[in-house]
Image (cartoon, rainbow, N blue to C red):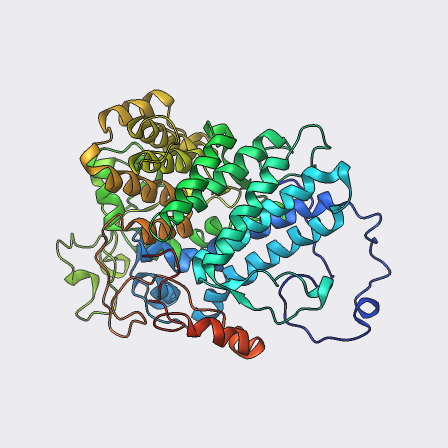
Length: 533
């Protein structure tokens, strides 16, 4: 990502700080540019990269959602015991740190966007940047809300502007409706007649027509979150989004290209390149079985079986990508020698290697080098997701145009083609993608299951684990068998939210307590957010 990122020293966002009459004087750095000369365009890539980083690598989702919804699996023993949070719903030494990362990271990203908004208020020439700032705030805060539930919204991000450092928590219902309204207004206001934003880390290069599609596509996704909690609002905003104009091709995909050489690496690629992860992170049996059942062409791109032996399994040397030999690791097993040792799993294939070079997990598929690339894209929202959501919207009777079967086919083809963002080694031809979609059409009687299973696979293979989990919560597909490992923190059920960061209980205790009191079951991994019915 060859855009200039900056770190603000101003106190912005929902950070908890002490109040003082000399706030502005104390927090003014005479060596920094003032608001009158600072270019707010510089804040756009900071917002974008901070957002994607908050939802990648060890910031959380790969350590939680990737295995909660059985995209990955891990024996999570020894050096890689940090995956016990995900594969077995068991606390590791850094669980409390992991669970706060998306919250802290996305509030940080939203703070950059809020400051960008403040710096462009009342400046008609910068109207597009002002509205993009609002769109990015919605993107970041909706992600927080989907992960945790109720959240500081109406008073958030205002420590610098108003001195509010202990913001109240808004209900997710009210926050979602406010965000949808804000998104509608900001997206509609984008205009090619005003200056185009610069320093854009998305592939749009400041093209407001692309940004308008992004805003309306985000609106569609958020609307579909509400299909069970508030079908009327879901229908209204889904139809508004389509009327405004959503993504129409893979060229509209929103992602940030990482730039590892300059310190902005892909967190997922970084994690999967760690020695312990190379060895212990495998594709879940659920995912591999799904891909093999229909001869999905993505299988040979993303999965490989390492060469025999422990050394080869700990190496990044290319393995066997032949689809027929791929084997998914069942979730919930370890390497500890007891009743849950992987060797006790049904259908255990045996290990590979011998003597000191033996490994019991040698026959299970792991991610290929394609997904270990630290310069790979980090996806935010794709045309494939949009088309699959439209397929569901049609199935539900929303007036969004087209047919469910047509949107589904477009979504399948686009999901396969999106992998090309990882480079030539991940590129699958349009002809192959289309032939696969034609051979696996939507079956009306099975539509919701089929659509949402494809959504899970597509977002999962693009390593957007948080999105795969959120849509699973909403739709119930794929139907997953939870792990019930000894000592788990969710009573043998798949977690449905992340507890609030531990600091909220001490720093913002009154507002935190009020929010927790509204959660059925309290601040736990199993309580449900508003739209998760």
